Amino acid sequence: MNEKSHCGYVAIIGRPNVGKSTLLNCILGKKVSITTHKPQTTRSQILGIKSEGANQTVYIDTPGLHEAEQRAMNRYMNRMATSVIPDADAIIFMIEADHWDELDELVLSKLKKTSAPVILVINKMDTLRDKAEVLPFIEKIKEKYAFADIIPLSATQIDNVSALEKEIAQYLPEGPHLFPDDQITDKTIRFQIAELIREKLILATEQEVPYSTTVEIEHYEEKPNLIDISAIIWVEREGQKPIVIGKNGERLKMIGTKSRKDIERLLNQKVFLRLWVKVKEKWTDDERALRSLGYE
Ligand SMILES: Nc1nc2c(ncn2[C@@H]2O[C@H](COP(=O)(O)OP(=O)(O)O)[C@@H](O)[C@H]2O)c(=O)[nH]1
Ligand SMILES: [Mg+2]
Image 1 (cartoon, rainbow, N blue to C red):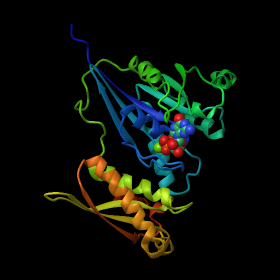
Image 2: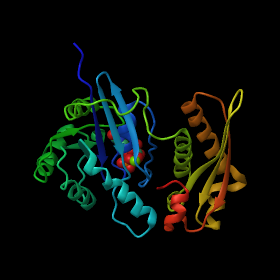
Image 3: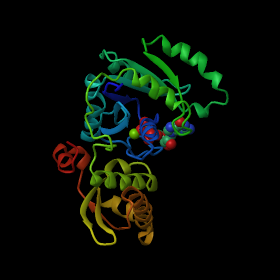
Image 4: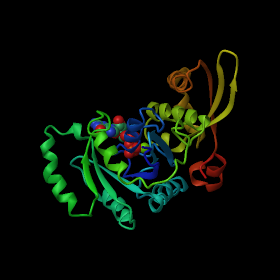
């Protein structure tokens, strides 16, 4: 007997840094969304597609919702974070074990407008000394909303993630798969490469620099034995250039080496990578500049 085909969208929502992108990568077994310990790493919606037999689940990783809406970049990120809610067949609302603050409350308030089932995922369970500590916490959060289910897990330890996947499978509507079964993301190779470079850049620099940089792949060429790539790291101010480049160019060199290794893993090929640092003034504040860099 043939199983009927199911396919649905699942949005992963939550404040910055709770582990949304880590969960997506864990479910897919591949890095499709970059993760760091710093907030505002994920800037746009990223689809992660998992096909298993008759089921296809299309996860939507979103930038974390945050309060500051002054800058164009932040407004863009908040729009991206909430625009997926109406279309989702199920929503994963992610919080951290033993932590609830006004940002979580803000995210929940947006979720209250949806009719889709909301699954509360309590991530980072590995940070608790005793898992039972979460029980009184769950009792309190339960009062806030009629969650379809509450699932404590650890995305980094891959602990209890399968319970979440089982739960989600119940909410996939009947219908044809929307993507080829071997496709795991909607993003182009160029985008994925730019993101891997941005991840290294965020990890290598402090404070405000990461939020005012973007990466553009200027050249991508498949040669007989390697792939030749040049990328531009755009910063906002002249003064940020030496920070990214580092003393004697050492920081840029390190970003380049680490990025190249990740890109080689992604492409399964040898890579030659050139990085340039250039200035585009106040780009995060300029909607037009944002669009020209691909943040539609
Ligand atoms: N201890 C612990 N850390 C986690 C877990 N999941 C994610 N993290 C860390 O939390 C930080 C933020 O993760 P990320 O996926 O970028 O969060 P996002 O902003 O919600 O997408 C990273 O440093 C992750 O390694 C977890 O289950 N346990
Ligand atoms: Mg993220």
